[in-house]
Image (cartoon, rainbow, N blue to C red; front, side):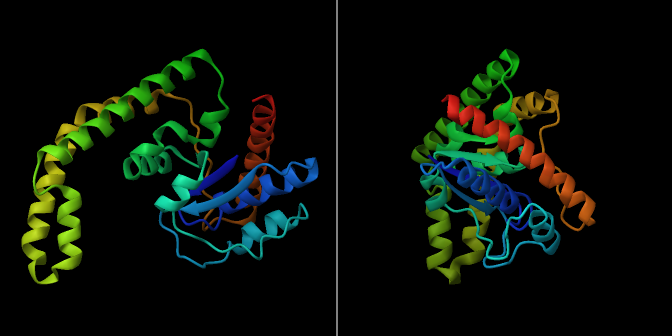
Length: 229
C-alpha cells in the first residue's frame, strides 16, 4: 500500500505524519507500506520546520533529511490512500484531481467508524462523482473548454488577455453548474465533528508537540485499521 499525507507546505504536519508512520512501521517490521507526503502550496526542497524537527527528535525520529514537495498528478496516481490534515486540503485534492475522490480522506475522518459517518461518506462520494461527471460533460460540450484554454494560454502568450477572459467565463459557468453539489458538501462537512489537525506553523514548540502527539495517536489507530484490512 502507498500512503500519501497532504498538508499546506509539507514542512509541519504532513512531514511529521510521514516520519511518525515510517517509524511505527519500522518498529513493527512492516515492509509492504510505503509513505510519502506533499503540500498543496509547498516550496519544493524546503526543510521541515525547526520545531517539527525538534518535536520528533524528542521521540528519537530524525526529520533533518525531509524536503518538501508539491502535490502533483504523479503522486496522486502513486497513492492508494491519500490522507489530508484538514477538510480544506481534502477539498483541494478532490477539486484538482477528481479521480482521487474515492481514496482521499481527512486523516481523522478516515478513522471514524460510526454508521452516520459512513452514510455521509457515501453521500459525499456520490456528490463528488456527480461533480466529476458534470466536469467531463462540460468539457465535452463546450468549446473551447477550460483545458484547451489553459493550453492556449501557455502556448500563445501574445493572446493572453483574450484567453484569460474566455477562461474566466468558462470557470464561472462551471462553478455555477457545480454550485448545488458544493453547497451540499459544505453543509455536510460543517455538520461533522472537528476533524482537522491543528496547524502548528508559526506557533511555539508546545503546539508542535501537541500536533505531534495528536498525529501519533491517529496514526496508531490507522495502523490497527490497516492490519485488520
